[in-house]
Image (cartoon, rainbow, N blue to C red):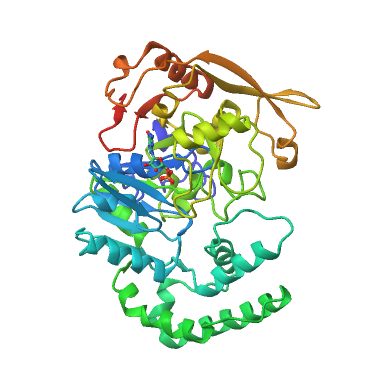
Length: 457
Ligand code: GDP
């Protein structure tokens, strides 16, 4: 015996029995031959994942989202047109590609069909192209109301988008959520909705809200979308599994970013789902071994929207300048994003917890005019210098970034399509990002358009 078959099958048969001898092990049903790339945000979200997914979707057969809800806002520019998607995967802009919503997503059916209809109205053929997991949880109007009431009354705001994401995930984890599959049974769906509504009334009363305008209509409104949603329902994990077994290319599209992950981010200033690559497996229904590549998208600088610390924040003047240059206003809420220098400490952490195999650096062009640039390589804390991202979010507010300064390139990169054609200082900057993160750069984005991309590999 050699290789795997020499392993003692502990617990199944004791060494010396004939049970395993001569048995031809079948190829596991879990083995995939296709390529499965996960695209995740490496910072605080808004890294430009939408554009990167749009570029990669050209080469993919199937694109799926695995977490988050309509709190994500992916902006994609095609020709003169701008498309903003909150729920439907950005891959939808490529004709014929199948786009799926995984079980890890919380789906607001009203918002989803609004987006669906508006995409169709703009000439995108969606027939047979969109699928929603039977296991996906629904986000309902009462989740939104609760989210807004809590943010409005809380002394310690999280800076949520007010779209109901947190309360919808609470119901999921609390084992009282409503899944797409429940819509198969009208009676069950109705009673779950009514229970949800009654619960929300109680929670809102505690917050001093008694007016639930239109609430009575919510149950019927949701049930009215039952048939339409069920027509798109599918076993997403199985579809992806079959696609990979058939050698197809699958793209799993993340929303938000690593520092907003509910477990690994700057808790409590995080979103309510696992935005890191592990979430791609649990949130789409495939095993982690089916994933072949994990691409981390990071801006050439950093931004953050919502509350919570940002260790490499710019000075107010610089903040204003880069916000204007980079048009740093949220796609979902229009809120101005805080801006700062590239945070190498966070980037290394993000590379590690995601298991990144490659980097896509976006918005390099935004830095074109700056005379010099800085990168944080460590943090100075009252206890000394640290180069690992701290778990204590409170302490992050007190750290001083240790910055390394590099010369700017002060030339436009917008028309560059090959790495070698970038100005010397821009290449040196990118090389430094690679050294600091230890992850090879595979793509560099130099503008909002599809064509404004440098493919390194
Ligand atoms: P996402 O949620 O990660 O997809 O990011 P958003 O769509 O919220 O924000 C990214 C914004 O940056 C969008 O308006 C994009 O059009 C824009 N964008 C993406 N890549 C680039 C780039 O390389 N340069 C510039 N200037 N803008 C970019």
